[in-house]
Amino acid sequence: MFQNKNKKQEKQKKPRVLSIGTRRPVVIALWALLICAFAFAVYKDFTAVDTHTVHETTVVQEEVTDTNAIESFVTNFAKVYYSWEQSADSIEQRAENLKYYLTDELQALTADTVRSDVPVSSKVEDVQIWSVEEIGDKVYKIVYSVSQNVINGEESSVITSVYEVSVYVDDAGDMVIIQSPTVTGKSQKSDYVPKAAEPDGTVSAQESTEITEFLTTFFTLYPAATEQELSYYVSGGALPVIGNDSYVFAGVVNPVFTKNGDAVTANVAVQYLDQRTGMTQVSQFALQLRQVDGNWKII
Image (cartoon, rainbow, N blue to C red; front, side, top):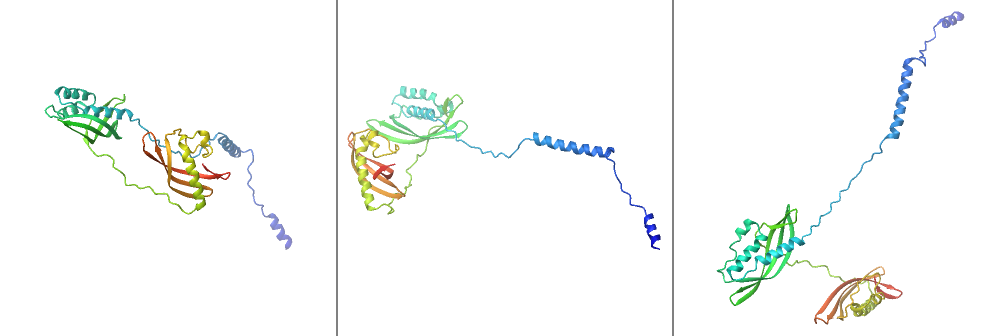
């Protein structure tokens, strides 16, 4: 019985194994594709462009415009525009000279600004340019003041007024005034008050006395001192050579000392008598001092 069973099992067919010959066309094609892909990958690796993100920073440089020519042009114009004698010839000559500055339209507009039947003459004493501002393509606004000596009969007075004009400047640098002198205001005194230096107790009374004595000695010699003499008191060219013996030292005013580490900051006003003018000149200094080999020195 067991023998029959074993015989039946032996008679059962073994499972079929599908095998593909290594020389079949499909296998060859697959290997060729794999080799080509590998070769292409190696090629790309050697020839690839090294790319990376570039962060560009744009630096905007402010263009500085030389306005000297514009200022000179307006100054010369003002000397012509605000000067005349009480005569028809002078007024006619003024109108002729203004042709070099004004457009034809402005010449017609300002033709009657000065009349010969008005018994007044004017002479320009001073012209000051307060600001030059570019307000359009090749167009500049200029604010200026004029001091005039106005003569009316036997009386004369100096008056100062502020005006603005617009000037067009072409590519060749030629200029023309395109706005009639218009009354305006000039800059006024600012109410800004800088913070005053105050002692903070970091410098002892003894150090304050020593530094004050040092500064008194130094500033007595400073105006007329040579570079060699300054080197005993100043290091690194911290103060320039003046080379003027007209200034006579008068005193150190309100020195304020503060200390940071081994350096002392001295804010001080120094009075000098100018022997040439008789005026007392007050100079303000903010100095850094340090002890070098036991002596104070301006650094």
